[in-house]
Amino acid sequence: MSKPLIAIVGRPNVGKSTLFNKLAGARISIVQDTPGVTRDRIYYECEWRGKTVMLVDTGGIEPYSDDQILSQMRRQAQLAIDSADVIILVVDIQSGVTANDQDVAVMLQKSGKPVVLAVNKADRLGEPPPEFYEFYNLGLGDPIAVSSVHGHGTGDLLDACYSHIDFEAQDSYDPEYVRVAVIGKPNVGKSSLINRVAGEERMIVSDVAGTTRDATDTVVENEFGKYVFIDTAGIRRKSKVDEEIERYSVLRAYMAVDRSDVCVIMLDATVGFTEQDSKVAGYAHEQGKGCIVAVNKWDAVDKDGRTMQEYRKKLENDFSFMSYVPFIFISAKTGQRIDKLYELINFVNAQNAMRVPTGRLNDMLSYATARVQPPTDKGKRLRIYFCTQASTRPPTFVFFCNDKELFHFSYQRYLENQIRSTFGMEGTPVRIVVRERDDGKK
Image 1: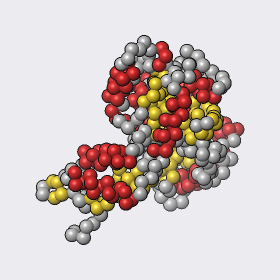
Image 2 (image 1 turned 45 degrees about the vertical axis):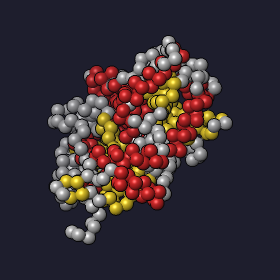
Image 3 (image 1 turned 60 degrees about the horizontal axis):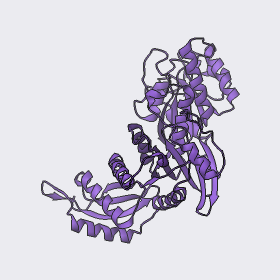
Image 4 (image 1 turned 90 degrees about the vertical axis):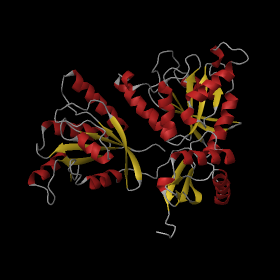
């Protein structure tokens, strides 16, 4: 399931970016007194009450401005509004209700989306000042007094947003369907692959990069199983993303990764690996998804007896940060190895959902620590008491030890390799969590 989206909108210079940074818990957006500093939408995760949402910061809305930059910012904000589950309208208590506030409020009411009104710059604690009640005139229900600088009222604000979100809602597909996100740079053949597996022209296929604007679902049932293939817009470098519709497409591509079980990272065999491919793959890895690297257009490569072996060796070096990922060489145009791709998707999906019994895990731990002794520092040795698997998708293992500081990254990597060599875990990230436990000597 993709994370719910909360868009923060309002006229320029009411404190949207400051509020965004406060809710995100990090300085993500540039904050300045000059209107128009935030021009593009900025995205960041926010966790509240154990549930995660995606925040979108937008540029200030000037509803009737003819200025080119302001009109582009207005289109950006409209795209964020269209994709949002809940909208936060930020107004300034010091300025009172302005004509622009009223125009933006009408624009949001027409969208039909739930709107939460945040009256910003209410920096004093206690009862809000009389001018606070003026904002009831916007017709958006009870306003919430917040201070984006000090953080007052932000909990109430998120509570109000969460009341409009159904966190129990699931995708309409049965759990037996494997959700596969096809991701990669523009023009590597993602839509051609979807058309091949669907057996029909579901997507527009063109040599022009950026043809696919939205994330589109294609349901496929065959002898290998049941699948939902999600075709996504190509993700390119931010410096290359000039068109506002394409920025919206990139967000949808990331959200498609969020709701997938397996990500097929497509490369163009005639171009090879690029830095942007590592960014695309890195996002799927960070989200804990099962991953496959599919090298497309293999039919267009001049080959001899060693071509695939040499290409695979180079890819293993390129994807050294994802050493677990399997490679497959396909052609969406001719259908070469598409059946093998289905089998690999099933395998990686099972690995991503694998659960290992605690007894077998601790047998592995005993063998691993006997083979390579845990590290020491100033005469104190790391002691690992036991481990257990906390969750799947991705497989997450918790190790309980006497001192977290002694549990060096290199030894964590060693134990991860032992887990993989013992239980498989191919095609999936493995997470290791270290917990410190009092051994009674303190």
